[in-house]
Length: 187
Image (tube, rainbow, N blue to C red; front, top):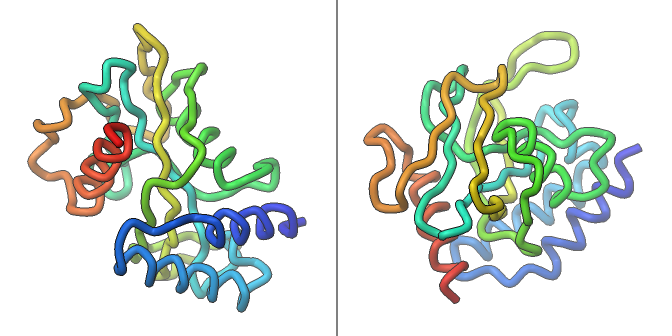
């Protein structure tokens, strides 16, 4: 069941040109993880699994949409686990962005912006929780003019933030994604 999504992730990462040596090292690590784990796309891979996320940007390019994650308790981009219905990593990021941001007509940019590996406590299908790595592939999504986000049950809050005025408790990985996305859009 995971073969098409696994193949897509491998293809995306093989084709992606990392912007620096740190990202190149992660790209190689992700590809190695995919080569070693047939279930690398799913929660069942307790050695870590790929996830897909998107930073939603308003059409003026002045603000980003962040969600206050109920478990983590911090402002994050939209994103999460891949699902069997996802045709690609990009489709997974788009689905998550639509679900968590409530904006239907997003325009996804066609290549990843960056990669981020972070440790989380993740629940398995049987309900047990394990500390493992999320190997996140991060994308940009452009919202349509006058987009009004709608908070889902997966969020404590949902809010537009100016590029340069992110919440004080925003972690480094989100700040790095925001900066990389801004550079990506200006390139």
